[in-house]
Each structure stands twice: as C-alpha cells, then as structure tokens.
Length: 505
Image (cartoon, rainbow, N blue to C red; front, side):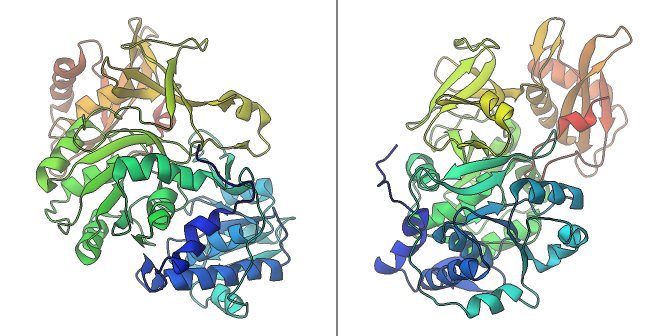
C-alpha cells in the first residue's frame, strides 16, 4: 500500500485539492438537471459537512443515503466524510422491510433520501429508534434549502488513514445484506492499483457507468475514479436501459463505459450501432461476461470489453483483462497490488487446472462486517479475503469463473460450473440470457436445469433438443441441461447478479 500520513481524510485527495490544482471551473459531475463543477463540489460539500453538525451529528455517526444518481449524491457523500460522519450508500431498489432492517442495523442518525423514493420508507420512519432526521433530496428540495443556510468553508475532520470512512451494504443475494466497513485510504488505492494502470484513466476522461453509485463497482466508476484524476462523470438517475445508455453516449461522448453482462447483452440485442465514437475502453463486472457477448460487442463497436471481478468486500476490481490481452470468457490475469490464490475446502493451495475458491490479499479489503463477527471471521482471514467464487487458472495465468461456491454441483462425480453451461446456452442464437441450477431427476441424482430468456422472435418449438445438442458439442456430453424452461426474465439483484437460489426447486 502507498504511504499515507496517519492524519488523513479521503476528501482532501478526492475533492478539495482540485481547486488549488486549477480545476474549479471544470465539470466534475453532469446529471440531466445540472452540471456540478469542482469548485461547486468543494463549496457544496463543505455546506453539507456543516449541515451534518447542524443536525446534531457527531464524529462516527452514520448517515444513510437512499439516493438516485444526481449531483447531490457526491455533495452529501463527501460532505459526510469531511465531517467525520460515515455515509452509508444504500441500494435504491429495496423493499420497506429491507430498509427497516438496514436502518435499524446501522443505527443511522440521519437519512438522506431522494423524493421519488420516500414513499417506500415513510411507513417505517416513525418506528426507527435511532433515526433523528430525514432530509428529502429533490422535488421541493429540503436538502438544498437546508444546505444553503450553511457556510461554504469547512475544516476537514482530523480522521486517520485506518479509520472507517463509509459503509456499503452487500447485495444480500441469499439473505439480509451485511454492512461492509471501508477505510479512508481504500478509494484512492482502487484508483492507484486498478484504474490508473489497467484502465489508464486521466484528467481528460469522461466516465459513464450503468452501475449505480450505491454499488461498490458503480461508486468507483461514477465517483472515485473520475475524482482521483480530475475527470468528468455522467450521472443517470433512471434505469440504465439500452436506449438510455446509447443516448448518453451520443450526447456526452464518454471515453470509458462501465456496464454489467446482462446490460451489454441487452444493448447488443437492441440493434443500436453507434456509441458516440469516443469510447476507448469498456469494462464489465458484477457477473462474469459470457465469451459470445464480449466478442459480439467488440465486433460491432470496435472497442474491447475488459471483464474483471470485484466485490463489495474489496471495493472494486482485483482481477481483470487488460487492453490488448483480452481473453473473452475469462476474468483476466492478476495485476500488481493484489495477490491471488486458489484454495480447496481445507485452505490448501491448488495448482493450474484445478477448481478452487479464489482468495485475495490487497489493501482495499474492508475492515469487516458491522455486528457480524462470525461472518467477518469466515470472510476476512488474516490478510486474505475469501470471495466465495470458484475459479480455475490456466497455465498462462488467466482465471475462468466457475460459479459461486454454493452454486457448484457434481454430475456423475464431476464438478459442473453453472456459468460454463450458461455461456454455452447464450452462445446459441435463440438465447438472450440463461441461468443453470441443479435439480433432482427421478432417481434423486443432481442434473443441470436451465432457465432461458429467448431473443426477440426466437421460437421455443423444438428448443430442448436443439440446446441439448448445442451444449453437448460446446462443453461436454454430461453437462447438457436435462430440462429447459423458457421464462420472461431471470431473478437478479439490483447489481445485475443472477439469483440462482430463487430458481432451485
């Protein structure tokens, strides 16, 4: 890890330095309503920091953020960090009861919430014992009115480098989410280790992220990466539909685009052929990118997709393909700053060609989970973070995703990777998306069962035999799905991960 002074507040590097470096008039964030310059970001985040004090928040209190991606998001997020208050970036697509759990679990003292989302939490606000204030952002603009009464100068809280700066809640794909605590140094480390050397980010870049800011992946793409170099981020508060993404590309000419596999597939299926011509790289994470999707995107748009893997626990991507060395169907190769191992169930190291759990050592690992000691000890073991992802490594160092630890299953005594079968299914012209889970046959033995979303206009008649033969030819005779069910859509988390457990019998 780079040397940081003991007294260190991440907002000094991410926000305040840009004015002294001459970027006061440069656009930092652009949303559909306004442009926020670096100078305005400094002034408004200082006002937000002062507002935290006016609301009675003290150092290390928590501020929950259920916010759409607009220019107010970085103002509130960095205002909290400046004040030594801990912002918690929350998924905007949760249910009332999920919000109740998180707000009670985190003991947040204040909630900043976008006006269109208020109705979801209104039924529970009066029953939350720790919540002292709710500040509505947008449409009547309670936040702007309150912020405008505060001074535009602020002295940064004297936080330390190893202090918790912010929380993210894990996606909770198999249960209630976990509060994941990240340090002040972590955001700059993701930029130093990954974004600068692997993506080559610089001050001239314009960033567009389909992944939202509440998602660890989106927080880097849409906020901390551009701030680390003085670039410009395009924010989109609505759903990231293919039409919306292509329109933003045409309008703002981003140089870097960050998506997830399901959206890349949908964008290809939409028939659009223009990206604005400024893209120099695309990035994918959240789920492994199917080989066919990556190849089809590069063929149509003449720009590579750099697929990688990251996690909430490690804040951003720690294993990635690189420009000029992309191998579609893999998550790429290790890069300096993170150490990777594949281990068996006993924690012993495995060699090339063996399937094992990926464990990672690096400076961006979270401090742990809030009030989840047992789960913290299982995930963060000394210097190593256990990802729960199964991988296989080739002799030349490329890692290929096999599935989550609890998604893997054996057929005839041989491990089957759901992702491998899904990739084979998606490579067929009739299939847009696929999910594979284990199901018992008449003899009680586990076999693959596939759920597929068809491409527009594709017929389902005779589909089973066609896909069976296609998978057998692609990945092996024993891996073909014994059942194929056509569905309108697959269950996913808000970050685009397929929730396979919801499809199991």
